[in-house]
Length: 218
Image (cartoon, rainbow, N blue to C red; front, side, top):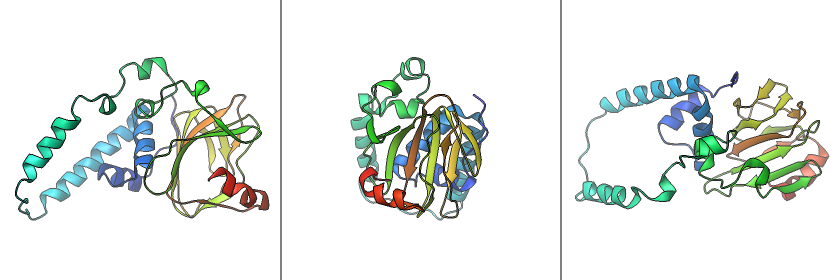
């Protein structure tokens, strides 16, 4: 897998600190699962965070804090929900292992919902701010031109798209903020399937995009 587009340093630092939302953490973990370059950068971010923690003055724990943590570990350990399926990587080659824990089918067998002809989605319905969904776009089609009210992470699982920032293929990630406006167009001969996590609604620039936005949930 020839990955050319990676996560920003700021995103990796926040991820290493455990401060991202569930949806964005899932997307970052899914990209890192396939990207040796970002795996190394996360280790660097964790080392930086560890060094900063060592400089902080120690704070006394509340009575019983250790017992509470140990009790939580005993409750979670060994449950099916907390274990990565060992067959996920081999059976579903185009689904990263972290994402496979949220899906129980191959991409082509998921319960896709049609937004408009040629564009389908699957809302993962995760908690927290924003939204996390899989988007499936037929060849030659595009998402309406838009900018962002917050941050948007997009991980390509299959196919590719082209926009103002370049060409994104399987494994690539687009790490965007309020300063970016773009219109991804599927430039491959197969459906482009992406995992998308946002922390705020998109801002569509065209009339059609603004009209359909309440119905498609983007």
